[in-house]
Length: 350
Image (cartoon, rainbow, N blue to C red; front, side, top):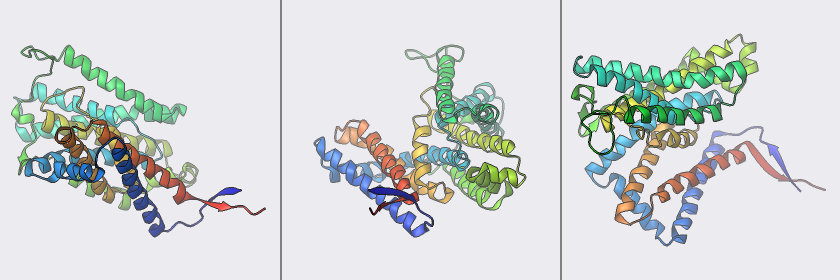
């Protein structure tokens, strides 16, 4: 008989080995699947990497994909630290973009660029934060399931923007497919070396969240509540307020990612603007082991997958689903590795 026993002491070296092994096995399994559907896995992986960093233009596109992944992953990290399973990144990105777009469309030609950009940032954080606060309030007051709640809010946010795009905010000058007017140049994030300054914002936020979690009282409270609500209450912490504050911050960061997408990439608002980053960020956050300093590495890796996946569609005529499949396999193996980190299998003597 095989018995499952919880591990008492798990050192960092063992945890690191298990997680690295999980990623390696996931790539091997993905390679086997690629070979099964008739492609050379070594060539596919090489072309994906070349398609992501092989030229200056491709490298710039990869960096542009890294930026929203980092910012959204940081938002997810705050929620996951609380054991609040925020699956609503897509909706929070969309609502953040909506808030920023409202400022850009109404004041783009009336305010100088710097105060306009700052106003868009503030609006995106507020809109994204409020969208995350809604399920947090229901969680605190009524004990609702935040996974389902945040997931459903994704579709509501997208439908709100879709309604605006096809209705009240539709550009009268648009021909063909309905679109929202393009932002005034004042509302577009400046570029440095061909890359928008959103990447600088992402790097600053990485440092900020690292310091916030590791060295501030509020960051410590978030970790304690995530580990044990009863312990937090015993220590005299206002658990409900901490939950609401943390989830609002989580949604606000995701909303900021929406502002970056709307301002720097789309230069308008669109209901497809979130582009799956809210879901991909769940994977990058889990891979980082909920550590801000690892989020940069996991975000770069998945940006390469996204950009490389787009490239192999054209260069090798490979279906777009292959890139998504690789992401899914990596997530499956990484989540599966958590079992072997926390538990061990032992043979039970008769």
